[in-house]
Length: 201
Image 1: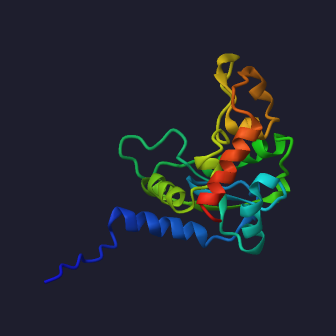
Image 2: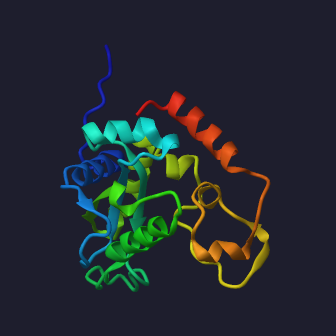
């Protein structure tokens, strides 16, 4: 007799899917959104004319469903001592504002070409939902063009190289502190092209 596994709505994967789908039901907004309180998850979408992203942008102009990046923002300072009602601050809003600055500083991107969805979420579910979204969409800035979410490293780092994102999208002023690596913008473009060939948008 064939064994059938009962559906468990409280299974971790199903809970992560539920949170991820709740994000996708949110109305898209311009970057950055108005400030708000809370931690959670987000997706950023590109609709512009940067040639390397044309498959993704073409999809999003018809229907906003192919994120270029997804991420999370945990509560500032984290929860301590089992205090489940500790304030989360404006972690999610601040993260989206930081990303907006990075995009605005890039010489070949326009902030007006981006949209976002975000979901304020209890931090218990944040990491699982983010992983689920990345596994579903394999967003190009998550899995190919690393470095978008990087922070200013502080002092000059002669042995720390510029990220693929900063190589392809120069302009963030603090990147001048970092060494130029062997990866070129053309190398990054080739990786993007292979990604879109293997992961249709």
